[in-house]
Length: 190
Image (cartoon, rainbow, N blue to C red):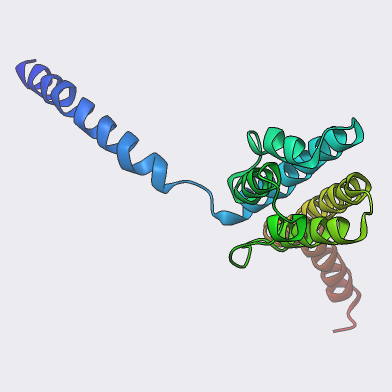
């Protein structure tokens, strides 16, 4: 009985350190790859653009709308929105305000910035284009989700086939072949 108490005491003393080390390293390293994050970013960018379009439809100034939306926007969209809002509030040229300092990391944000520059140059309403771009982003996210679901169904079919094929052969084909072989051997054909 004393060995059990010693082992229990050792487990109790060792457990918090093990759990702490697992919490500190294991959960952070088990974070999903960049793909799920990219899907979330598409929908987050679409939602941000929807809010920006609603602000512009309501009559807000572009600089005010961009500043209001940048607070809740994803980081890679919030930076150009905040920069443009600040420059527009200071009276900078809209084409210069919507110009990206470096190449944007996301092609959707680059499309939005091009649209904002064209809108500033031509005087076209930015709200309509922003809403259409948000719809395109949502459609792209839905297409990606559909493609991943179809790919998953194909990947699932392989292991299921490997599991059910032996059962089908053992329970379906072997009894039929054995029955036919017995009939053929009893009839004297062979």
